Length: 88
Length: 195
Image (tube, rainbow over all chains, first blue to last red; front, side, top):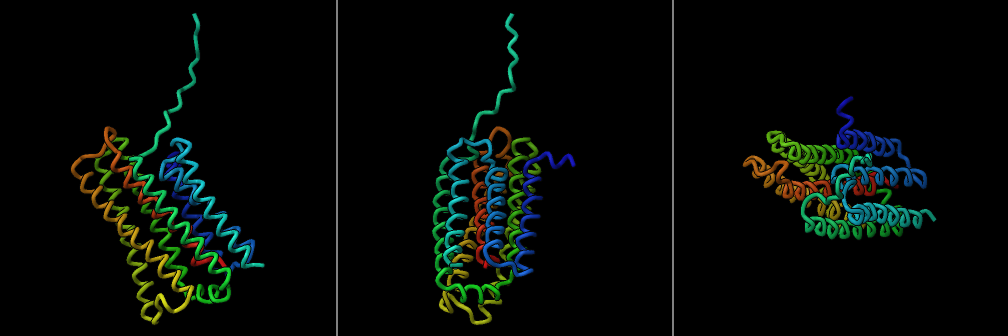
């Protein structure tokens, strides 16, 4: 359990589990608004883990942290918007 | 007589690697953002076509490739940590393991492409496949470049270039490799699963 003190080990485990959830949602044929929102949320959380723990931007100047996290948010919102259009 | 209790100073904020690599990463991310948005908005006017042909994609291969890139990224992050702790042998070893994950990704993707091209699918088959092939191939090329970068870092690491005194080049290359992972984290659910 000591290994879990290392943020990159924690991030790796969380990323594996999150990928499993997305794969499972695909297997059970999840579709529609709630499935899309869930998958985007999972992708957003995964992206943040990569940005903050793997890229080590948690301790970086705020500007760079916000630029990368902002990219993740922008992409998620654009995809959500496009899917909302398709559901109308 | 003043006994000031100093709270442990927070380490100074620091951007890993060279500033230039982060500008490059931003440019790449923006290009992919446009690509992702183009896919999503094109889908909005071809929902039935996209939903139908998305079913033909190999979701297991896509998920396996996600695991490979995540694990590859993890190894490279471990390599950077090893450099900061001066564990010289672990720097090169983790780079090599990260490279292997990248190679695994390319093999899986190769089988996926072979199945699709073998079935006669091409860029001009329909809008969905045009996006599927161009998006994943654009990303494929980035994995390839990432592996070239990891090879260079590995050679340098074997020469003993990196350690707590010097990790800039290693951190810059690692940041690029994590970007390749980050892109796939969006690409996989978007193209393979979301419907």
